[in-house]
Image (cartoon, rainbow, N blue to C red; front, side, top):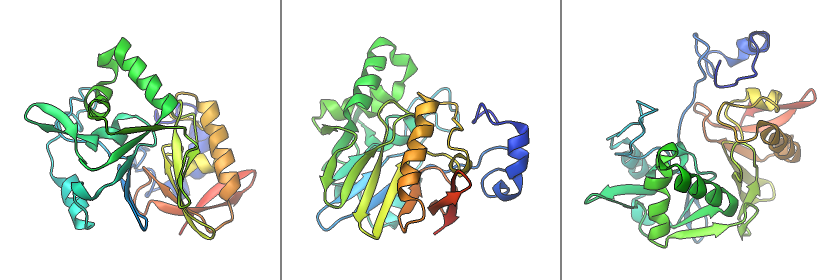
Length: 265
């Protein structure tokens, strides 16, 4: 399984019974979804991550390349929201499948999809990717079409990855998958949830936190982030809302041997 470069056949075989068919298919391909979360507080409507986007050139990903679909907007409407309702868009990190609907094509220009929203970027994350885009634009076209236009429109809020938005919304640094990745804690007390972003892609990484994935900036650091976050919230009522687990994508974390496991909420 190329997705997890250090995953051995032996380890996969040991876990195959519970991984299949929900998390791994019959051909040992990882089952993933791509999704946003919408959070409503008493005062704000917040989108966390914005998926892939339409009309974006992604030549290395044929199924995303120049996508032209109304599915995302229809799903947003089915959930009871329009683009004008979003007050904040929080990007847990700046990979292509988390920023795509930040912008839309209008008269040949990329403009913010959510005209009333502030877009929340982690400071070091933004600096890293804009620097990379400046040096080699072809290496990260999603920065050109889905991040820089937000900056040009003065719609960005640049924050530390531990930023406390208010008493109900707090960012938690979970670096490793990218240089300044953050997760988002929603709520407080016994009624809280963590929108994980990409600090985990499969429940296999809960049982084996040091298992890195192919696009990690620093897999060792990503493993440390998993151990810290799951150690903090395991065996509690905190709901984990994952970015890429197949539906249902929410679970709770419990202790498993010297690591963790996900159980359905």
